Length: 213
Image (cartoon, rainbow, N blue to C red):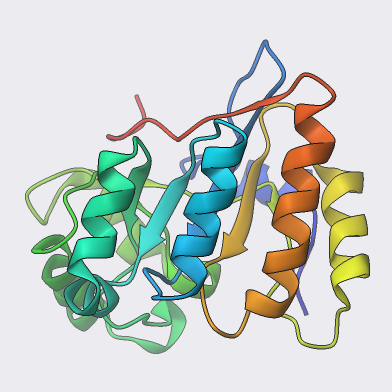
């Protein structure tokens, strides 16, 4: 089970995490998890170029090692990056020391003060220590306002698009995945979303790096 639109109560319970962005203008913050991937990531980059859009890529460390040139390309094209652990760990099922070590391992390849926990699952202590800078830098923990559901193989691309268009607002942080599992839905929904909102005067921006003040 997951929420397509993050409930306001959850945002209130965890106010130290970033769920959306203040936006006085019509601006959306696209994010992509789990890459870089040799097929999905180039597709995403092509789509973003077509609309002059910028985004934030939460990268898995081992995938950056495998696709170093692709990682450098997305950096060079003006997108921001974030740490998504080295091995896509579930924080609820991982001891805090092991979890922090894995984030640190990913940091050797991903230079960013942004962090998103895989599956959105992180223990309170893990989050607190990351924000406090125990690994040498204070991380800003990025969650989301809208979860596209592109990874959900029970969803059709049409239903996935319906959810995204219905719930996205100015300031929304929206999650897609540049992964093999999500590609069937993402490859349909992302172009349609970019066109829909661009035609309505929205722009797409990357999240600023660094800890939340």
